[in-house]
Each structure stands twice: as structure tokens, then as C-alpha cells.
Length: 97
Image 1 (cartoon, one colour):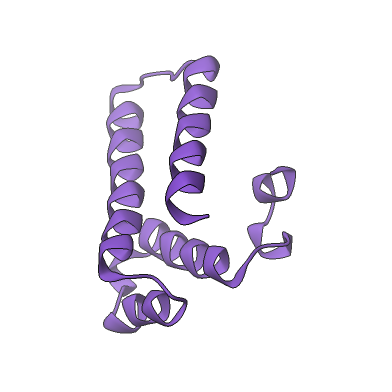
Image 2 (tube, rainbow, N blue to C red):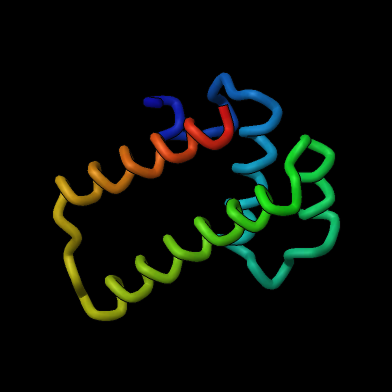
């Protein structure tokens, strides 16, 4: 997990997790550059359309919530951030492991 806090590209990850992180990084940082090939790459990594929709919606949800908080100057408590990250990790592990 510590390797993910730095540059995820240097972490030991499965091909599936690399595909997910490539997709969500692009969707987060440059959403206007998303193209059909980005979805195709996830399919080629073995994800169903339902799983791709889940990946997209989780990424979009976190972007939405973070922009709400940032736009209103809300400080998210560290304990809540960790609890949210733990819950997302548990859901992810259960669904995609």
C-alpha cells in the first residue's frame, strides 16, 4: 500500500490493477481526453462492461465529493478519510479479487 502513496507506476501490481489506475488517472486529470480506446483497454484487461461502469462511477464519485469539499473549503477529517479508504479497499477486494 505504501508504494501506491507515491508513484503507483513503481508498485508491484497486477495487469488488471495497472489498467484500472491508468484509466482513473486519465479520467481524473484529463477527462476531456478520454476516448473509446480507454474503455477497450479495460475490456482487454478482462473487465466486463458492468465492472468498467463501477470503475468509472467510483472515480467520478470521489472527484465529485472532493470538488464539493474543496469548493466549500471543507476540511475532511483524517479519521474519516482513512475509514473511507478502508471501506473502498474492502469493497474493491471483495468484488475484484
